[in-house]
Length: 172
Image 1 (tube, helix red, strand yellow):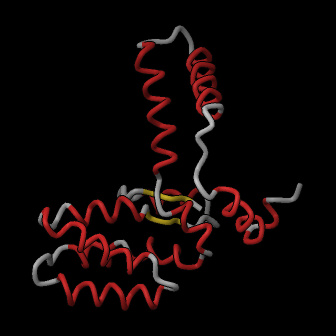
Image 2 (tube, helix red, strand yellow):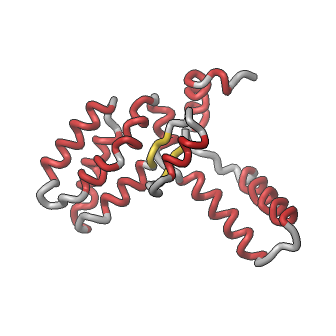
């Protein structure tokens, strides 16, 4: 599973390199992008109605929820529903997963947090004498990040679901 944030061409590149990968768009990024189109006073209501789309039981119910959203908000904010429809091919894989997995893959925040730690570590050093020195520093930053005790919420339940969905990858 690869969770991407809407970067054009990224899903195609991932599938070219890893053909069996399920590419999933970051739902949080999609919601944030949608909220950029609406007025400040409507943001909570729009976010609540979009939640019905991504919390639907399956892709058919989600499509109906998106239609309902468009009926409610389409006249006022005509760009939101079409932006979801353009990304729909990367949204619908989300509905094939159980709720425990959905809680983990609906956002790229955990990855972004790790990337922030790596960027902070490399920026404070400026330059490195060798590639090996940079690699070691990044490794140590990741180790330190792992030891902070900040783990992804609901990870244990999701890991158990992943073991059921992908038994060949969890064969200890």
